[in-house]
Image 1: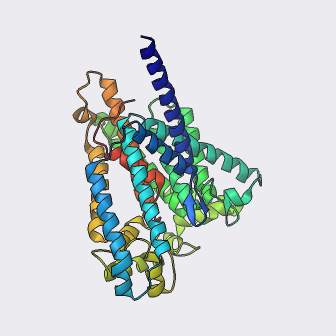
Image 2: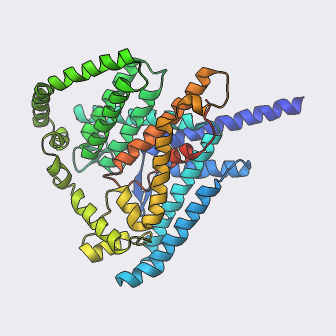
Image 3: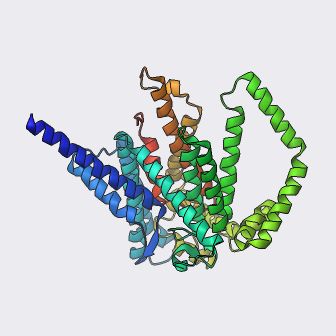
Length: 429
C-alpha cells in the first residue's frame, strides 16, 4: 500500500515537471535569436529534454507515415543538394550550408513529433494557452516601450529603428505569430468579453508597432473570416436574415465609412512612422508588396524561375541561396513557404505536404463535432474536444496565410501545432 502511494506521488511529481517544461517551451516559442549562424530558441533545449523524457519513459510514439515521409524528404533533398544540383547548375556544394539546413529540417520533425505526442497525452491545451499568454505579454511590453518611449535594450526588441520584434529576430515573423495568439482568446468560451477585447487590441497594436504589412494582412484576413463565421455559420433562418440586413446596411454606408477610415489612417500615419508603413496597404496595395523594402514580387519571380528549371526534385536542401545567387546574382529566400518548399523539395514532395495540411484544415472546418465524437455521453465534452481542434486548425490556417509572404518552413510553432492536428486521436482536457 505504501509503495503504491509512493509510486503515485512520484508520478504526480513527474507530471508537474513535464507541465512546467511544456509551459516554458510554449512561452519561448515566441523567442528566436541568431547564435553562431543558427536561429536558436530556449524552446529548442526544452523540446529535446521533453523528447528524451518521453523516450526514457517509453511513451514516445512516432507516426509511421510521418516518419517515412521525413525519411523520403531527407534522402531526396540531401541527394539532390550534394549530387544533382551541383552538376545541373555547375557549382561546388557547400557542405556546411547543407548540413545547417538539414539540422533545421530535423528540428522541425522533432517539434512535429512533440506536438503529436502532446496531443496524445492530452497536454496540447497547455501549449497553446501558455504560447498565447506569452505573446500577449510581449505585446504589452512592446506597446509600453513604444508609446512611452522606453529605450531598454533597443537592439534586442527593435529592428531597424522603431520596428518592434519582441524576442524574435524578424518583425514580420513576430507579427504573424502574434496573430496566431488571437485564436486562443477568440475560441476559448471561458474568456470574458473584456479580456477578449483587450487581447484583440493588444495584438492589433503589436502588429502596428512591428510595421509589418504581412502581419496586418493576416490580422485583417482572420478578422474578416471570424466576422463572416459569426454572422452566417450555424445560424437559424431568422438570425441569417437579420445578419444579412446588417451586412446590407454596412455595404450601403461602405463608401462613407471607407472615406472616414482613410482620414483616420492618414492622420495616425502622420503621428507614427510604424503605422505609416502598414497604412500603405489601404491605399496602394501594389506598391506595398513591391516597394518600401519588401520586394516580394522579385523574390517570388526568382523562386518560380528556380522551380521551372528543376520542378520534380527541386534543388535540394541548403542549396537554394547558392543557386539563386548564380541565376539572379542576389541571395534571398523566397519569402513564401509554398515557393520555398517547391523549390527545395520539388513539386511531388511539396504537393504531398500541402495537400495533407489543407486536407486537415478542410476536415476540421466542415466536420461537425457530433460526427467527430468519442461516443461520450457528455455533450459538453464533445463540444470541448471539437473546439480545441478548431484552435489548432485556426493557428495552422493563420500561419499558412502568413506563409504567402514568409518562409515559415522551419517555424517551431507551425510544426508543433501541425503535429498535434495530425494526431487522429480525440483531444480531451
